[in-house]
Length: 144
Image 1: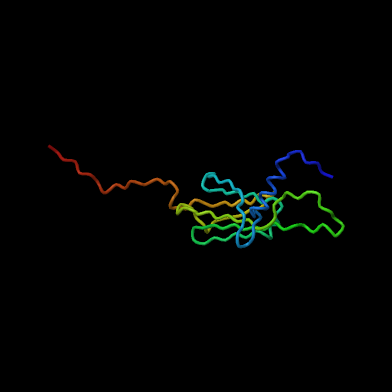
Image 2 (image 1 turned 30 degrees about the vertical axis):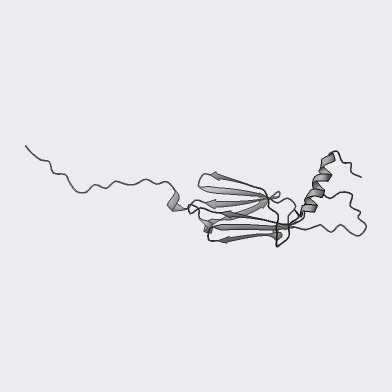
């Protein structure tokens, strides 16, 4: 049997259940994310612990990236009696709008240890570049 040490945890869980924070396909719950730039790419990390990679869907339409995932209950057998269940189940979703300086065609995704990582390259047109200076012909010297 598990002992509860935080008296407010149960109140928080009941509040979440009452307010309907468990996500459904028509009203998914948000998922936390981190986003940062590393060199010539942007990296977005979504927390999806306990989600089967087959239950993750990534869609890209123009400059909008949509990530949807579903955490389903695990079948434990008929003789299992739950003592405590705090991990949220249901559907999670998050949309991220990409700027024009990113290349959505080059997005790659990796899922490891419950974290979905998207890497989005910076578009060539947005990378800093040097401008060459051309020399237009010989300059004539003026003699005085």
